[in-house]
Image 1 (tube, rainbow, N blue to C red):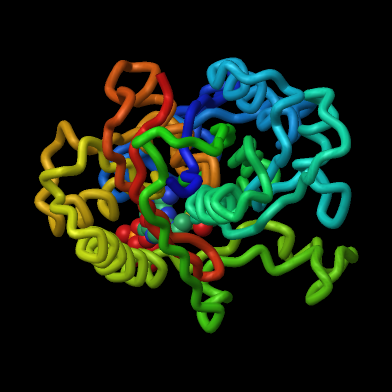
Image 2: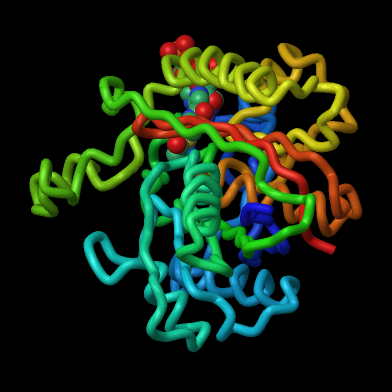
Length: 331
Ligand code: ACO
């Protein structure tokens, strides 16, 4: 039997500081009513100023390894998806997490696929394992988005939160494995969702910083329309390709950006409420961390059991998007 890649543990870390819509009402011209109606978000959590993305990722990673019943020495690869890395260029956040875990000498690198990061991670981990190159891969989606949000821009600052989620993907002969992944991109619309500054296009200098180019800029309504259309087709395609009906799905765990986007896809697939995991109301949009945080929420609330069939989907800056079908291999 060929080697399969199985998600054998899931975990998350949520920082302590809760930021409510009422708190935001005191910071920018907005209202709880507007935020809830347009996004479904009620609260989000913010890291403290001494916590970096690798600190959040490390805490989630440590728990994921514990729940996998493996030793840290068994991990042979660490990949972190993030758009808010500890450092712009180097070292990678994955290398810093490896150091915090006390793991040395293994492959460790970051990927950048915005909110689709976790689906990209699953695809990469699956390929590494099925090729026989790696045996136990720690994947992490970690974000301190509060560090790249303009807290004076009401159109973006109400959306995002901080947090991390992690999973261990292992070589397995078990029947609960990653069945399929699909990842895609379209760079032609990169300017609709972008942090324009501090890279080589607009280097960090006083002029660029004074124009707030270091922060997330988004044309929200255009992104919304494209996200709904793209995701609806993507999830239908992956189900069709694998000859699976939406009725067979135990849990639909979408990227948590906007409740209206989630509901549009849910309706398209005729999914019932009990099939859908929603955490955007409490965590906001945590980009690459949102799917593993939502999966962990399901796990910790006894909604995710060994063998459950999960459908994941995500859309984000790039644009990037993707979906995944997998059976939960954790206990
Ligand atoms: N409070 C009150 N009013 C506001 C706020 C606010 N926080 N923000 C914007 N408005 C106003 C606007 O100024 C505008 O006013 P106007 O009509 O007088 O010009 C009005 O509300 C409508 O603004 P829109 O941007 O058209 O609002 P929309 O209904 O599109 O909702 C939102 C905005 C929530 C951002 C939505 O477009 C969205 O969720 N987009 C998709 C986000 C997404 O999925 N991103 C991808 C993943 S993120 C990643 O990859 C990092």
